[in-house]
Length: 391
Image (cartoon, rainbow, N blue to C red; front, side, top):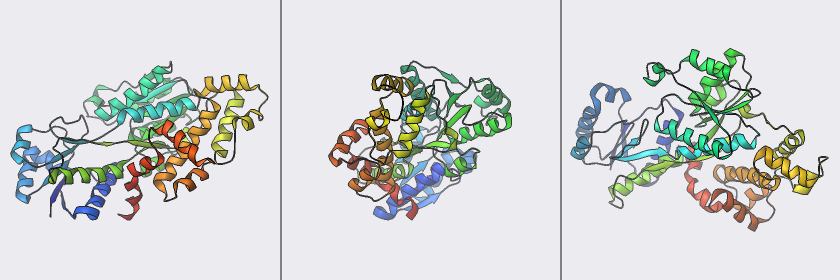
């Protein structure tokens, strides 16, 4: 029976979900033994101490939150090591990392479709995940002709002497143009924003619309207002980490090979409820689509709702949202359909009908266009998320 040494922080929702996926793989396939060292062990004894303990226990692999790894020590240990990266990816070993860039792209497109044309990004220490989420967000906004206002972190924050400089952050928030769409690098940082906005009398979402990352249920729901967040495929990422380890053990692949955790969807709550569109009819149409996407609605139905010609309305709608009315309807349906695929056991036909797709064959073409894969491939990719509650 293989022995897996864990060196990770269990206080965060992300890490607990990750370990759930790893343990689920073990239960289903391998029945590994796990031993967890507390994080302070590394702080007290360094990587040398961790490796010494791994030898003593006879570990067959290590999954750890290493920031830096001494390649000579790794060679000496000669077992698979998967680093859960924090500051940067480790080139010497496998990483549990993320598609951080596309999380930023998802955030930018979400805000742009809601009509926002002023944007901000909040991070502090410029780690790989903070940096790349920001790069995805900023590059997408710039391609649309916009600019992103960045938070200038203080020296104390950069040197990790202070988690957040409340005075500096509060001043930045107060000076932002309003209304503005603010993307935070994760839910913890987004919570900093909602807390300080409350103290400063800045209204969310009317003045600042806030979106985080991780969909940490506790953090999102203690925020006032409740926080919208990008959900990541973390449990499935843990399962894939287990698969990767087993492939290492069976010599099917040779390390280093990375596990990349992808963003799935945006879970919307009160912090992003506001639409910012200058044309009241466009706002009316967006609200109608969001409410009635599961019904039999068409572009003609929508055009008949407002006192504008089709040509003028289509042009105005695209200017406000960056997409056509038809594409907006399909996008909303695809996002709702995607969520049903990975959170329910409904058949593809049943799930498609529930979100308003009446032509079953057509859904494959539409889904492929938006997700670059078939519905079946998408469900299979995220299959193990459904096992989260059974662990």
